[in-house]
Length: 126
Image (cartoon, rainbow, N blue to C red; front, side, top):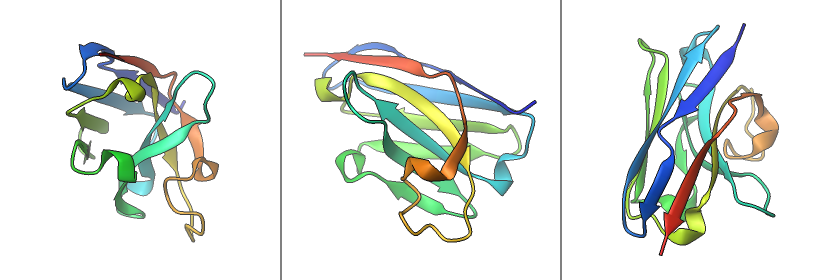
């Protein structure tokens, strides 16, 4: 059974840092593009960062230079280090796995991802 389980969310003040982790079971991460998405209340789910041999490494413009995505294929663990957090980044953060032959809409598009975790809440206070 394929399963993604996120952890590491919590509350932090503006300017603070958090590290999210996603434990993968039931399949091999090396064959997929692994991604972090987030969804704030009333907003659409948006891609934050992706990583994988089939998709490279890509960040949303809003997080470049502050967030770092990493993947340990041996441990089947995906991580997201988030620094200099701002209140607008309060959201539920999800990890996801996907595949595509042609990333016509870019690997940050949610249409390519078929396996999702349950999410972990990140709250940034001002």
